[in-house]
Length: 496
Image 1 (cartoon, helix red, strand yellow):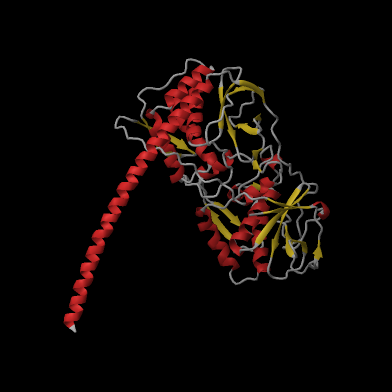
Image 2 (cartoon, one colour):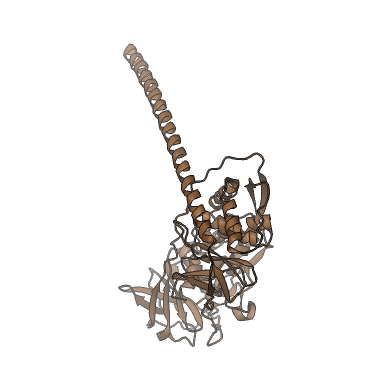
């Protein structure tokens, strides 16, 4: 028996050894084939890219077309028709019974639509003599390699000058710079807007605030696959125009072949001479934020937030200033043709993992073992009373929506900010579906509870029941509509 087992073991070892040798050989052959394929693909792409850039630069030498700007679109102003109400904080007050309320419209917006990243086939040979460029993106240090030994200088701002610089940028001397930008985009989970700011920061680190920096930013964005347009004003200043999948408020734009291109450099030239030629396979920038952007940490001082009615909901938070800077710089987006969609964008953006790890354990501990009604009342009172109310006009001087993280940070917020934060907490902590509810001049929320909770509610989607919840109606429980709201004019804004 032992001899049989020994023979079996020896045979098994022999078979495994033979299998291992065969597998190693197969793997080696497969890797060799892949290396050949990769080399051929890179060679083919380099040829294609060189031809595309040469043709693009040639078109760039032709006269650019003068185009007038179009007026920026303004967001919906939240001007309360009635001041925010305060419900008397007494437990023995009668609670209203069930009351189905009408509403005017039901809108659906999907903001989880970020396009797959475009990854050009660029793998430059590292030059030991390349310069290391250190730039900053929202306080985050980024190192880039620049193979060119001398800066390109434009003689002027004519079409020929721009084309000459584009041709020089198309050389292999700038492949390392482009490759590093793309690598940082991937490593830091940069959304398209943050990537644009990276290329702009890198270009300005090299050239300062100059026409050369604008052309280099346009080149880096273009070679990364984005739809952009170079332009020039009557003052000979160069500008970069960006096309987005959707639209942004408070920013002038130019329409080119049916596509809206936004001027995001805070200038407002009445007209621009625009280079309108398309580059192969370009795509518009996405405004979605579907991943947490990984910025260096620079913490604020401690922010203390506490519910007035439920003092056990007591959290101390510190925020990443760099992320707050990104949020404050972010364009104010909306789905093309519908201003209401802007609030769905902010409500669809998650809190950072850092804030979740500080805030959510406190909230979860307090609502553990509670009914949905009890837990929701605790969460809504936290949002109602942890910070002060102030309109955007009073605090900022213009209409501005907050990302959920900003509402937790800033000392003041208005109804839209609180409704956005509340729906974020309800979805994350209770796993319930929530909507925003827009009244003229006011925004509340509504939640689809699986428990039967009395109060004002809406019914849609074949009997789905959403209970009104107003984070600005101070001390009010879920199910209570703030006085003065015209339910018949309410618009339902669904969230992803």
